[in-house]
Length: 295
Image (cartoon, rainbow, N blue to C red; front, side, top):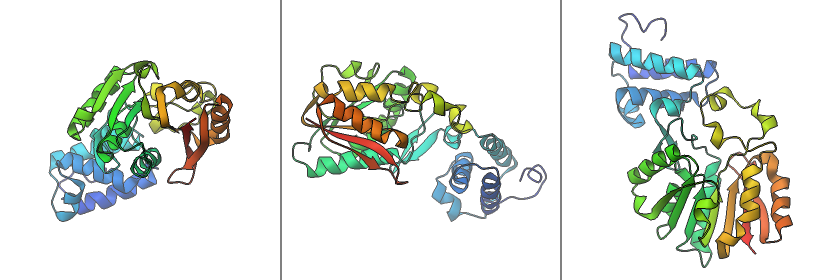
C-alpha cells in the first residue's frame, strides 16, 4: 500500500485488509489481522464487522492517507489500542490512552475466577470488592457487570487513570455501583470490610525491565508496570497488609508474573493469616493469579 496508495489506484476494504495484515505480520506487529481491523474500522468510522459486510467499498484518498499514517505508527511499535483510543476486553470495548495500561487476556483469569466464585460460594453473592490500581477500570467494570449485586471500590494513584476509568464505567452502565478513589495501594480503603480484594499491580522487576518489548516500555505508563527490584514491591504490601480489610469469608486475588509463583505462595504462607494459597493458570497455561482465603 505504501508505494501505491499515493496514486489514483482504487483500494477496497478487502484489499486494504489483506495487504496491511500481511505487512504488519512481516514487521512483527502483534495480532496483525486484529490490528488491521481496528485501524481500518477506526478510520472508516464503522464497527469491525461492517468491514466484512461491505468488502468492496473503495477508500477515499483522505481515508487512505489517514490509514497509511496509522499503519506506519503501528509498524514503529506504537500500540494499536492507543492509536484508535480503545481496547477490546472481556466482551467490552474500553477507552484507553497512554495514562492507562492496555488490558490483556491474562487478566481475564482473575475476573473469571471471582465471577464464578461469587456465584457458587455462600456469602459472596452481593460482595463489596476493592480493585486496587484500577487503571482503565477493566477489572472493576467487568466484575460490576457480571456480578449484579456487587459494589466496587476502584482505586488508583493516578488521577488521570481514574478519569479514564470513570468514563469507561459510565459507558458500560455501571457507574452507579463503582466508587472511584484516589490514593496509593491500600490507603483509600483503609477502613473498609471487603469480600474480595483484587489487583493487577505493577510487577516487572528492575532486572526484567531491560527485556520489556518496545511497544510496552516506550508507550505504556511506567508507573503501572515496574514493581521494584524484585517485582514484588506492591504485591508484598497487598499480601502482608491486606488481611485486616477482608471479612471472613473473604478472598485476596492478585495478578502477578509467572516467575513469582513460589515467592507469592511463600509470602502468603509466611504471614500466617491466609488459607489455601494457590496460583491459577492463565489462558497460556502460565501461573499468574494468586488466590488466598481469609484465615
